[in-house]
Image (tube, rainbow, N blue to C red; front, side, top):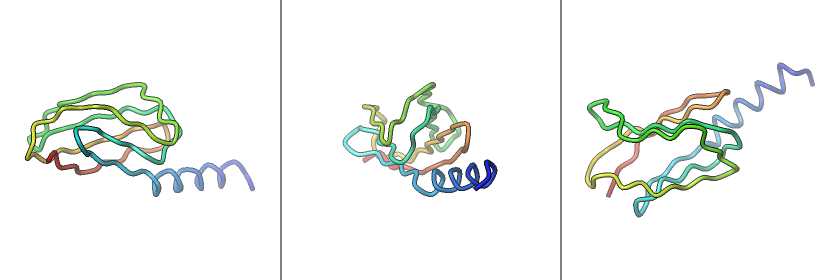
Length: 90
């Protein structure tokens, strides 16, 4: 297997296994083993959380108090990918 094929396979595996949830005021990220930047935006596009150089070693959780009954966009960026998720603060 050459380096390009391995790199592409790793990229697609990481992209497909990344999961985000927000429960009991805890943001949980599962499926990465990289340093990442985690940003949370409200639906008006205002950034409400910015976590840089977060080490995700398979999973990561952080207590984050977000106003309830709102929808947020969580953007996770690593060297290999950037992906956005929708969460609801209940």
